[in-house]
Image (cartoon, rainbow, N blue to C red; front, top):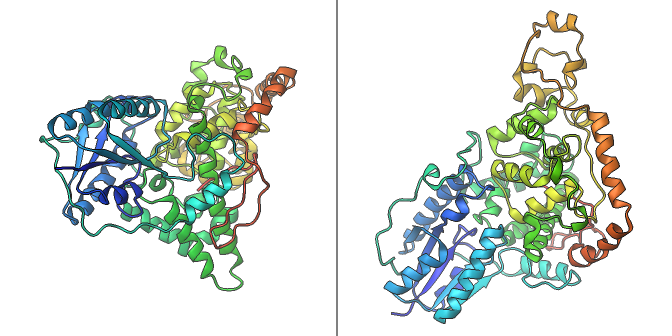
Length: 510
């Protein structure tokens, strides 16, 4: 009996699923999700990603069961799994969405394509985001994004004729059995399409009026940001349905509802940026482990400080806002973009840490880890792209600007609750008499900063800008701009799915 395989990856839904819809036109399907041990033992994943996916798979399993189909969850390397299925019961085609993942998934796809060619199997891939394969330059990129998000949304199939796996697969392995980092924040978001839809609805109908002006502060961002990012990362929601739902909400706004109008428009612009950054890794997969501008090779690699990295990852830098952000991240798996950028900036400049290990640590901690966005942003905030003006955040100024009353710092660093406002963001400067007065003498939670902030930042800037000024570094910038930079200046988003073409300096956050 002729049949096809629908390979679910980062597209854990049935709604607006181009691969499934196309496969069903050819007859029965075998629906499969593959747990790949090589990917799950990599340094950029943790148990929270795995558990979120399992939660989403359970919901997807039930949705398929309601349509007379079975989701088969198989553990093994992709080529080996497909080869085994083909030996038992040959199939004609594989249908899946494109994936811009890490280097391991990129190499896996190359291996699978080669295997499909030897077996004369048609592997059809469909765009998941507004990202283009084999893109030569950015000139037509915005038009492609607009077309992608404007296409008609594909409905959920009512009946799915299904083929079963030729063998009985054991239960999925545990995180420890797969050898991954066991980090699973107790307050992280839970997986599944229903949770994603609820989060999106609450944002569009209620919380979006906080978006403009609320997404930078760690106090307001948890509700002002949309919080749909993990559901977009793992495909519980499609990019297209989010953009079109936002456009519909814009079209229904009452006259004078300017805050929500601005918030929703800004949100769509960041969905555009979401794809803009992923395109960088699609065009240059090496971005995960090599400097985008190779002229920056050797800038930090030979100056690694394990002590500085330990202080950063264990919330012991001595700068309260930095340490509070690390604790929040450890407890929730999420942090708003401004604070993410500050963490990377602190690591890259005063602590002078190379971005690769910092990037792996943050990838494990971010529930919404999206490789294309992650590594592009890590390098941009570390100053190694060659095309972006360095952003160097002062963690003390950021605290005063975005947590002026110390509410955020005191929430996540309860040991500092007794520190007076005057000294909260620089508690190591408190006179001994005040330490004694507030019972803080000898308190090991008041850390002396690892380095002098002003001096270490000055030295870091001197090294970076001396390199940027070299003629050969400037000369290498043109090729990067041609390959990765956007082409137009920003404009206001309209309700009919029109997004602003980005400029190279804007950042994004959900």
